[in-house]
Image (cartoon, rainbow, N blue to C red; front, side):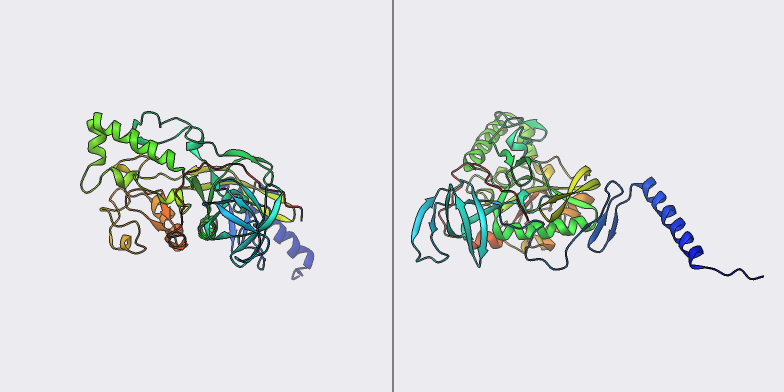
Length: 378
């Protein structure tokens, strides 16, 4: 007699198949990626990227910390001719409340008003919390040259940006960049996440005083250590390729030093009605050199081209010892509109943001002060 297959039989078969697949994934610790939905066997539910949303980042900008790169007027309304309430000092934090065109409504030390955000930076952890942040210069600088410690720099705390973040409810590094650059970094991170990778940012804004200290101490080391000198001055390279003596893009808020990791495990966290990925375990990709190795070991291209050109680097071949991780990192960043530099695999500029503030009085002559990030309640 022919057996009649019932709906119950089909259901049992499908359930068995599901648990067979789940068992296989558990053995491989595999992360499923299905378009915009990411699953991990280490969490109870998936995180979904909403198809339609009224914000551009993983979390909305409302309640995040901002910093102006220049002293700027706080206006009563969102137009330049409006009444001035007070002057916001460069580097001092404020809370972003709302956005209209190129204006932010903010709370600055209890005063509410509007500022033109052209010259303003936004704190990346507040809006892209899935990125791993590790401001090593804030606790133990990694800067070396040919593997040698740079006196007064290596292992030193060069500035302090580790602060309590009320939005994330934890101590976190303050990592601001100019607002348009933040959008490109977010795009690069989303590209990385789709492949099970994540950005790991070591530095964004760097005070001018810190930059000068690195320059001076590296120069002194180079003058007394032949190996360090030869490691820098090889082929067409020189000290200025690795630490610029003038006003760096780091001081302008238009540069990041970043690496790439492969995600092992993560959890999904909730803030108000929003969810985001919090990476709990990862493995950093092998790169051509350690982070902040100031020598020819760190170069990306076979010879140097102007860091102010958006396209010159495309005509130069990669160095022979380039790694898979460095190539993937570069692809994520350039696809999102960032520009690599020849001498450091980790350094990416946003030349559009730099051009936008050209002619401003921003000199990076300040340290970041405070974190004004606020909780999301909805």
